[in-house]
Amino acid sequence: MTDQIDPPHHSEQAEPTEIGLLRAELRNLRARAHTHPLISQAQGILQERYRLPDGESAFALLQRASQQHNVRMRTLVEAVVRSPQPESANGALWFPRRARLPAPRLSYETAPQRTGEDSNQGTVLRSVLSQLLAVTDTGMGNVQLPDRVRGGLRLEHHTGLSEDFVDFFAYVGESGTSCSLAARNVAQVTVKDVESDPVFDEASRRAILAAGSAACHSAPLTNASGVCVGMISAHLDHKVQNITEVQRKALDDLGSQAGQWLSWYNRTVLLDALEFLHALGVRHRGTPVRRR
Image 1 (cartoon, rainbow, N blue to C red):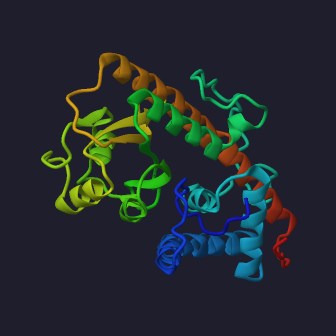
Image 2 (image 1 turned 120 degrees about the vertical axis):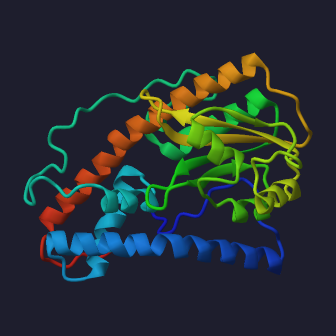
């Protein structure tokens, strides 16, 4: 990965106006404000651990690990900040006793099939979003992942939603929305009428209505232990009664498969990236490293 800052991915075309450019710059500034402190913290950890001469060397190691394992920079620095230090400062492995398992199979129709796609988080989450929209028969939806540092959820992928919506819901706290309620209860939540449902705080309600969403449905992505490891939400342009039992079952299956895949990704691909980073740090201990 070459991105230093990871604003939410989206499928909307940018507004071909000066306002559109200003809005894009504002989104980038917000992303930087959230991501740069994490990068700085990770740089400090790596500088001290591997006796690196400067923060630039630490960033170069992060960049190489991000690119090598196709892990987003924000995901990698979160893992560096949150993970215990390597058992041995000079050992080849950060996690020497971990078990390595193959990626769980994704059985739904739009799941990645080609070699390499099944280990790419972006590809899998876009596939999950596509399946969500097919099940709920709508063109608006999003995927969120837990923010491991602040708590709550951060927007990861979306389609069919306005730029104002993306700006407002780039990060969601632990209350005031249907997705936060679904995450807290680890259960699907249907909002039949956004305008009147008490689950929303007023600012969130206005932002959702302004995006053209009159009803929505949120479903958690859960691992084998039933822990919420992500969230999918479909937005509809009309009020609804209830989703059908067939739809609910399909979203349960989708949430279980995607959640177990995310858990595998965090235990395998992300830890592979950390171990690659550790090997680089040991190899370059005490010496300057420059970006490629």
